[in-house]
Image 1 (cartoon, rainbow, N blue to C red):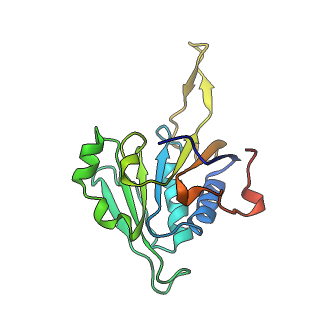
Image 2: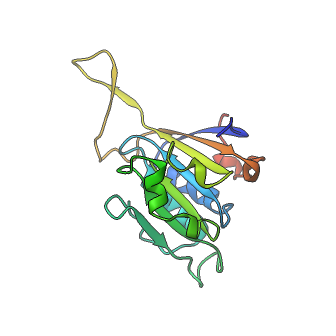
Image 3: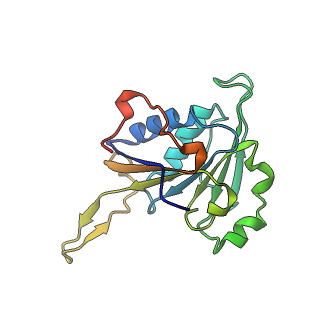
Length: 187
């Protein structure tokens, strides 16, 4: 991929804010959109995907597809966006290459769904000429034994601050999406 069309950096303080940001973004997504999520373990990728699902109006209950690789979450006909696209949620953590991505056959659903790929950077860019790259960062904490910051993998820290960087690539994302003013960051 070339350079992004735009970049937006946001600070969120809680998991609820992460979810709300993603729900606002989900409301502007369309069939054919590809979203790539990057971030260390516990950064909030699944929470972000749950928010996207809410914004799209798909069935609740989104969990990480770590062991099944792909989960499809259908749009609810009586939900907030009836007739909207389904959400295809992929975990590419255990996949080594773009060829392994091709083996799970995302091309068959890409045009009619919103496809979200956790750990997809460097593996899925060939699927579309446009994508949103979402990077979630958790704060580093200092270890008493080290001067360097280390990641804190405490799973009870869902409400610690995070930085979310969203980049738009390709013609679909020539313009930054309009998000509610409360969610606009310091880009």
